[in-house]
Length: 289
Image: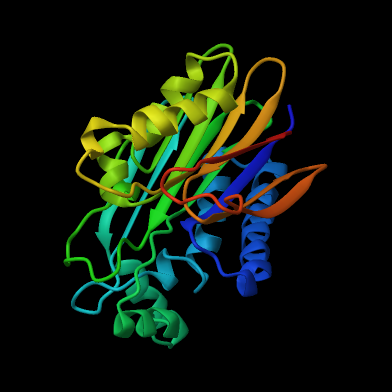
């Protein structure tokens, strides 16, 4: 079976002028993760390594490039899930990694983009994530985020929580790995990663199921009835006995995705169609592996 790794750099708005940069870092993450899989490493290790590449980029709201808290510090959330065992691990409001990076590299862990964002009060929603599959068909998913801008210290977002930031599970016939991005409170309330997986498992067409989940489990969810705008994105790896597919979905302005196998690779920035509105319009795209 062909191994695959796929990542996203966050659902939100990526400037056209930085599109090439987002594509490049996403593909770099895929290549690093794929190296692990090609050398018989575990899918958990591959997903972790790919996630760390994105965390180390100032372009993303995770790790080094994270939004700042109200008091100007960096606190990160992250999680990972193993589809074969359905074991899960997550951490919230973690700052130790940033401190270690500061000591090791001798530079300020608050990068200039985050500092400027702190001054002008412009928030980023994007959370990074990764999904992967090894040659045996085992899948895993991860999620990592710096959280919303100017959050209260100690706030824990969806990237740390089971079923909100990521989800992975397998049956005899189907395997699925999901990682989400968007407004953390909305993703936590709706448990979107898990709900997408549930819809896909109960459908013969994953693309239709994902679109249905975005509408029924997120946009139209009674849990979000008091919110005017509901924003999210998701990256899904789906496999059955006949084929494997990478699917992206978002109702934000844009979302950058990349995937790589031993024989194929692609990096693309998905955008909503012209004259459509974020929050209500959904862009779903599938790429057979």
